[in-house]
Length: 379
Image 1 (tube, rainbow, N blue to C red):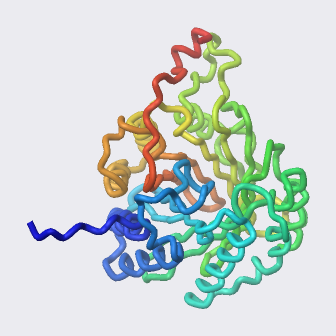
Image 2: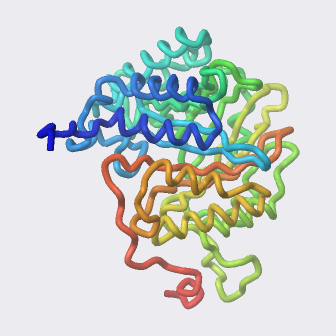
Image 3: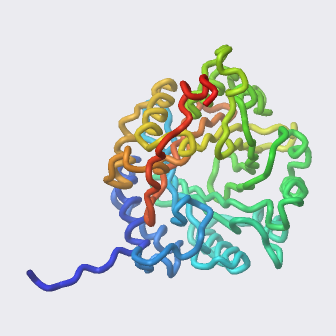
């Protein structure tokens, strides 16, 4: 026994370790992996040095246990998944003004580091960073980790910063300033505007993305919400929605009126890349699978089903889940947070799996869940 007391694990080390293992799953080389691990720790700022024995640095809305980091893997047939990391640079404070300022500084430091412009963000900064902001967050940043050490950067902004009653007005004005004057009128009806996102840096077709919230969404409605042209296949969207939400099959007369999500709402994302038509060029359907399973073993089964139906290999998913943590999937719920089906004009569909860090807490499995048989019985 040397008598040396091991240091308490720190948030930055914990997240960087997860990222390093996930980079291997995504096929990134050691040089890129080391660089991205450093970027993650640096982007978290001083809280990267914070002991995990302490509570989360703030009540971050980014994850259920307030870890300011989330991972996602975008799957396509015949290739390794693309890895992304979502983080909150201002997570060291619950003060939204300072949170936003810290986030903007982080984005501009990335712009200087990787040589990209922030003009699009500058045009709408005043809309999303008022003097007395409201809402659950100020700014998130997503990095799409690419070979070569230069990621694609996305920034997520809060449309409710001026109050939820002004969110629609804020989204409309932001789209107009960014050149998409017809875009707002192309959006379907929704129950809220949780995010606006911008692609910054090196993207083949930079997107402005508007996320919509849909309470009690049905499978048929999920399939009818796209406004892109040509639209994705409605039948495939409905099948995805039913599988992930464990909803009754189409035509099941015994489940009439039970064909809707009753927990955390689904989200849709409408991506705009051109201004001529006013129509989106992409549509993504996000289902919060963690609210519709008893434990992550069930969430993993649904993810595997969806991946295989779309011709994608699920082996990488199991490797990714093992890279993030070693617990049994049946011992908690929320490791797999969302499953999403993505359609972009001119590209094949992809499936995205959102994976929680769980640095602070593992939510216990649910004692009971309204399974399909219970729904049919009206229980």
